[in-house]
Image (cartoon, rainbow, N blue to C red):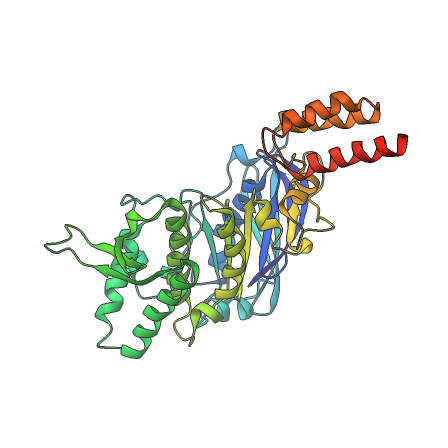
Length: 403
């Protein structure tokens, strides 16, 4: 499954906007308030209407509402071009006085085999609250063994529902005697994914309520020390939540695949992929997601220059006020300072220091070398950074040539 094109008309702040998506990792970039999360909302709400027509997903009464329509307009439309099992579909969802969903092609000879397929394509949404553990609003259908369980709440903004995952995990352990090879393969697939993302972490396991634990608990080992999931950092827990959710859903949706994690197909929408992550992890996670889930398409929002520098320009969409979404000329391999300055239009350093450096440049241009040198020496109290060396060298060179 892959989304190729998205058109938004009169949706929130978008009067008319076109988006092209690529296989693998896609990053949506822009300042706060420009509409990054709105793009993900448009996709997830539209797919809540579309997927019941194409998959084993159960229909839910969730639609766009009046607040999603651009002020001054009477109707919004979200149009998606998507490939499913090699079949190109055009999906159009509109909301005005009434809501309508169009799907082409829509013949039962095409749709019914897809809904009964042994391997089901998914669309999964990961909200910004994914690292927050909750035991509220638990859905018992998530631990079921049928394919429809893979779709339960997949497109609803949610926190980390550990109890749902623990219940499913304990069911898997009960099945070890009945289906030892299949069940062990599922357990190994999840542990392999966790180990790949979280260095030093392994042996994820669910523990039922007992004398030691008052309620069912999820544990893992980190560098040889056993930890409760609640004892992880927000960044670790956010990554773990994404992995647990996606692996579980891929296993449920693709019971006949030898390796559902590697071969299962999904579109994964992630709001603020860089949330709580160290810059080193921000670079790592972009590659790990596409490495561990090679048949999944990721569409993520980010503010991270580190992530942008790890992705080809055609896989980046930049949003800017009053402009059509566009693709940058460069990104992959560029350093973070370059990306901050030229793609994110943000100074590389604090504004006060930047202003002082610009003042030195002006003094040199006016050949006021004495005052320029004084300001350079003052700035050196902050540290010996390259610009100061360059400016002092420039003064020395001009002074020598002048003599």
